[in-house]
Amino acid sequence: MRDARRTADALFRAICLGFSALLLVLSLLTEAHMTAVSDRAAQMKTEIAALKTENEVLLARCESRVSLETLEKYAREELGLQPCRSDQLRFLSLK
Image (cartoon, rainbow, N blue to C red; front, side):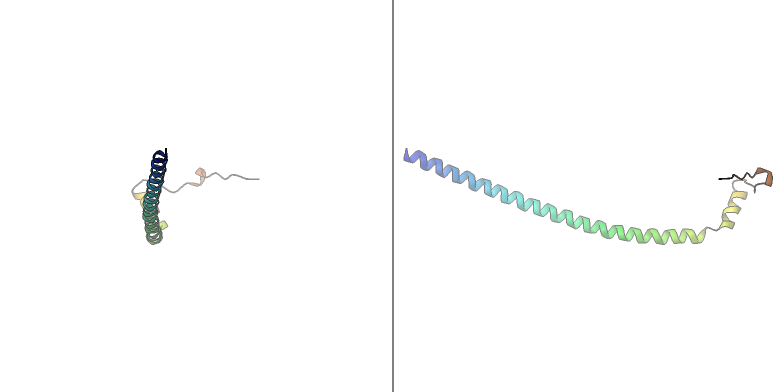
C-alpha cells in the first residue's frame, strides 16, 4: 500500500513537473513571437512614415506640374472639347 502511494505521489510530481516545463516552454515561445510581432510593427510604422512623406512629395510635384492652361490645351487638342456657348449654360436657384 505504501509503495503504491509513493508511486502515485512520484507520478503526480512528475506530471506536475512536466506540465510546468511545458508551460515554461510555451511562455518562452509566446514571448519570442510577441517580440517578433512588435519588431515588425515598429518596422511598419517606419515604412508608413516614409510612405506618407513620399506621398506628400509626389502630390506637391503633381500639383506644381499640372496647370489650368495645360488641362485646357489637353481638353481641346486631345479630347476635342470646346468651351461652352452661353446658350449651353444653365443656372439653378437654390432658394
